[in-house]
Length: 410
Image 1 (cartoon, helix red, strand yellow):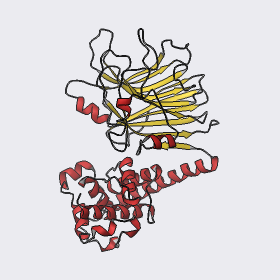
Image 2: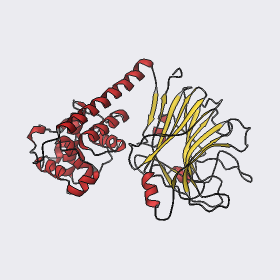
Image 3: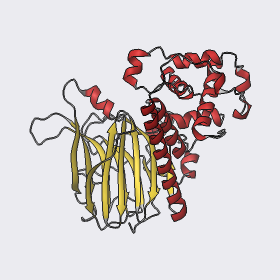
Image 4: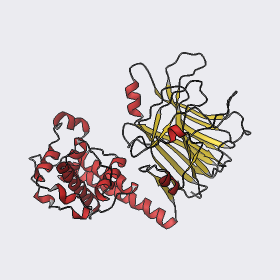
C-alpha cells in the first residue's frame, strides 16, 4: 500500500475496533479480543477475517508496530462493509456481484484527504471523523428478520464470552497463550519455552514466515528404530502446571507429502521425552503392507505409557481424515489450511480431538478418548519425518499454542 492508503487503513481499522468494543482501542488486541472482533465482523457482514490477521493488524495500527502489514483489498472491503453497515453477504455472492469491492473504494474516497503524516505517530494522533459523515451507497433496506437474527446471534456470543471470562476469573483458572509473533531466542525464553536437540541449520530458520514458528520435518523420532536412535530435533518444550488441562496447537497450511512426515504434540512425565510418552499428530501415510491404496492424511496417536523404556509404542489412534487421490491434492491442502490438534485431560481420562478446514471456524471432532495412568508435566511441539532413509525436509508453520487449566472436579 502507498502511505496514503496505509493512512486510510489505519483509520478504518481503528474505527472498526471502536465500533466493535464501544470505546477507543489504543493497544494491540489480545487473542480473546481478536476472536470476538472476528466473530462480530462475521455476524454483521457474513465474511470472515482471521483471528491471527486481526491481531497482527492491531499490533501494527494500535501499537505502532514496526513490521508493515499489507491487507488485501478483500480484507479492506470487509472492514469497510462493517463500518458502513452493508447488507450481509458471503464470499461467493461478493465474488459474483461485488468483486470490485465498492465499500472499500467508497470509504477510501470519503477519506481521501487524510494526511499520511498525521498517522505516522501513535494511534492517539489519528484524526477521526464521524461515521455518519461518510456518504452511503444506495443499497436495499436490510431485512428486519435477518437483522433481528444477527442481533441475537451477537448478543449470545457476547454473553458466552462473559461467562467464560468470568468463570476463569472467579475460579482462578489459568491459561497460557502463544501466538508466535516473535520467535527470537529471548522472546521464547521469556515465555518459558525450551529447545531440545537444536539443528543449527534449520532452527535458525524458525522465523522464515513472519508471525509463525517454522519447524521442519527432519529425520528423527522419540522412539528408537532397529538400527538407529535419532532424536527429535528442534523439539520445543513447555512445562505443564496443572493436572487437568486442555491443550491446543494450530498449524497453518500443513502439507505433509512423504511417508512418516508428521507434526503434532508430545506429552511426557519427564523432560527427556524418552520414557512414558503420548504422541498425537497429523501424519502422511502411504504404507499399507503391500496393498494398493491412495496416500492418506491421518490422525495418529501413539503411547508408551504402559510399556518399558525404548520399546515399541502402542498405536491407540489411526484415523484417515483425507485421501490424496489423483487430481485432488489442491482440495486436500485447502482443507489443511487450518489444522488443529487438541488434548483434554481430566484425571485419567484423555480426549483427543482435531479440526481441519479452509477457515478457522470448523468445529472439533473427537478422534478417540481413553484412560491412561499418566500425569504429563511437559508438552512438546514437533515436526519430524521419523526414521526414514531419505530426507524430505518440508516446513511446518505453527500458528498458535495454548494451555487452559480445567476443573478436575467436573
